[in-house]
Image (tube, rainbow, N blue to C red; front, top):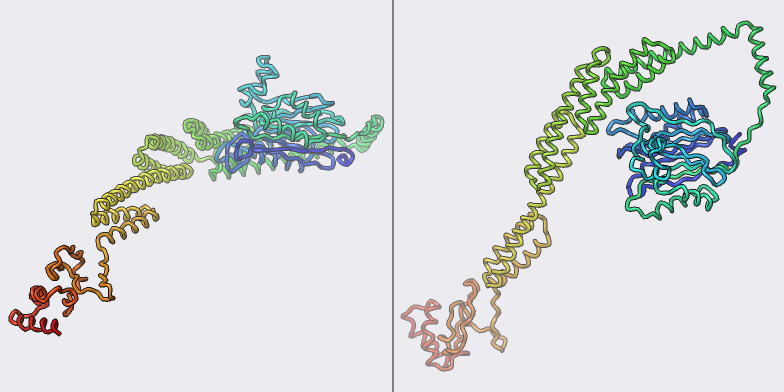
Length: 603
C-alpha cells in the first residue's frame, strides 16, 4: 500500500473571475498504489457542453480502468479524451488545454497539450516548469523571446496543439521524474500564471505551510492586481510531504529467476511455440475487432452519422496497423478521410464558415463514390444546403442592418423572408435564431406604437384640460373620453382612472344640481321654475333671476302661496292673471278667480 506509506496533500481553488461561467476544471483520484491529477482550461464557448470537465472526466475514467505510469498508457488516456471531445463537437468545436500528472508516490510522469502549466518546486526553488505548446513558447525556444516576457506575450494564447484539435493531436509526455520529500507540484491555468510572476509564486510558497494556504495566497495575488477583467483561474497544489521509499532491487535474485525460467523453457522445449500461439491468438482477436469496427463505421456512414463513422473507422485503422495489414489500412484510411471531410464540413457550417464547408464537402464527394457505405447524393445535398444557408446568412445581415438603422418594418419583412428560407433549408438552429430576431423586432415596433398612442392620449388629455379652463365642459368630456379609450388600449390603468375622475368633474360642471331655497321657517318657496321672473311676480326688481335648471326639474308654484310674498292686494291682483294662465285657467273665469283671491286675502 504505497499511499498508506506516503503523505500527499492536495488543495485547489477555481473561480470564474469576472465571468458568469467557469470554463476551468480540476479533479484528481488517489488509489492505493497510484494517483492521477488533471487540470483543464476550456477554450470554447459552448453553453451546454463543458469541454474542460469532459476532458478531465474522460482521463480519470481511463486511468481508473487501467492505472499505469507508462507513456503509452498516458498517451492513450489523452487520446481517448481527445476523441471524445471531437465526437461531442456538434454545435461548436470543443477544445481544451490539459495537464495530467500520474504518480506512484515515488516518481511522476506529466503530460500536457496547450498551455495549462506545471510548476515543480523543490527546496523552495523551481525545479522545472512545463513547456506551453504555443507560439510564444516557440519564439522563446528560438531565442526571439525572453523568459520574463512569455507570460504576457501577445501570442501566449496562440496554441499549436490542444485537445480537440481537428488535425494531428500530439501531446507532450515527460519521462519518469523522481519525487523527493517536501516537493510541491503546482498545476494552474493561464488565469493564474498570466497574473502571478515566478518571484511572487516563490514568496507565496515560502509563506505557506500547506496546499490550501498556497492556493489561497495565489488567489489573493490575482485579485490584488485589480484588473478590469479577471479571467477564469484555477490553481491546484500537491504537497509531497513524504514519498514512498522503494526497496532496492536485488539484482542477483532477479538474474537467478530469469535463468531458472529460461532453463525451464529450454527443458520443456515448447516455450517458443507457446509464445507464438499467444501472439497468434492476440492477432486473431485484433482482426475480429478490426472487422467489427469497420462494420460499425459502414453502418454509421450509411445512416448519415459521419461523426460516429469517423470514430469507428479510426479504431479499425488502428487495429489494421497493429496487424500490419496494409491493404485494410489503406481502405480504412480512405473511408476515414471521407468521414473526416464530411464531419469537418458540418463543423464549418455550425461555425458559419460556409465556403470552407463547401470545400470539405466537395473533397468528400470526390472520394465518396469509391466506397459503398457513402451516399454521394447525401453529400451533394449538404453542399446545396450550405449554399442556401450562406445566402440565408446574407439575408439575415441585411435585416440586421435595417434593424440598426431603425427601419423596423423593413427588418421584420427581411427576417420573415429569412425564416421561410431557413425552413426550406431545414436549418433548425438558424430558424430559432431568426425567430428570436423577429420577436425582438416586433417588440421594437410595439414599443414605438405604444409611445405614439401614449403621446396621442396625452395630447387629448391636455386638450380636455384647456376646455375645462375655458368652461367648455362638453368639449372637455369628449377629449377626456377619447384619451381614456387610448389609455385603456395600451393598458395604462392609472391614466384610465384619472380620466374617469376628470370626466366626472366636467359632467358636474355641465349638469350642476339645483339647491332647494330655504324660507327660514322650514318651508320651501313655490316660485323657482325655469324661466320664471320673480321680479314680475312680486315686484322686486332688484332681485337676481333664479338659475336655470333642466325642464324636468321645474316645480310649478303652488296655489295660495302669493300671500307670503305679496306686498299689497293691488300688486297681487296684477300678478295673478298671468299666473292663472300659467296654471291653465280659462280666460272667462278670470273674474271669479280674482274674487277667490280677494276673498282668500280678506279672510
